[in-house]
Image (tube, rainbow, N blue to C red; front, side):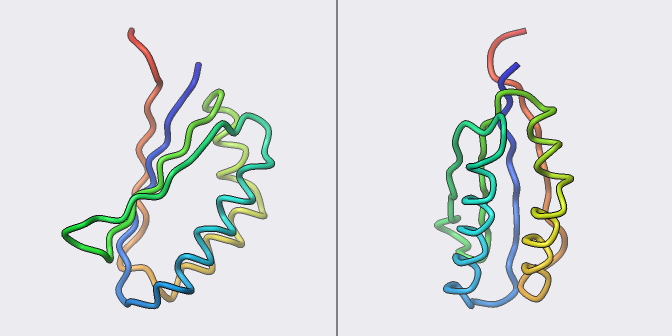
Length: 97
């Protein structure tokens, strides 16, 4: 079952270049994972410190394998100095019940 994952982050400072670099590293890491389909990054027009990444995966197991991987955890740790609060995750399956 195809799933879409939303990752919502709020940043406390405007070091956009570094934040974009980490976001790109995360995306490139995901792209080579089994089950990855696509992703997009959306910057809030009303609050540019708020970013949502939407990624699509073939199934929740593929997403969980990437989410729990050592590589992803080390990439996520790079956000620590820039985040305001913790990321929020939302999981959706695509289609009708």
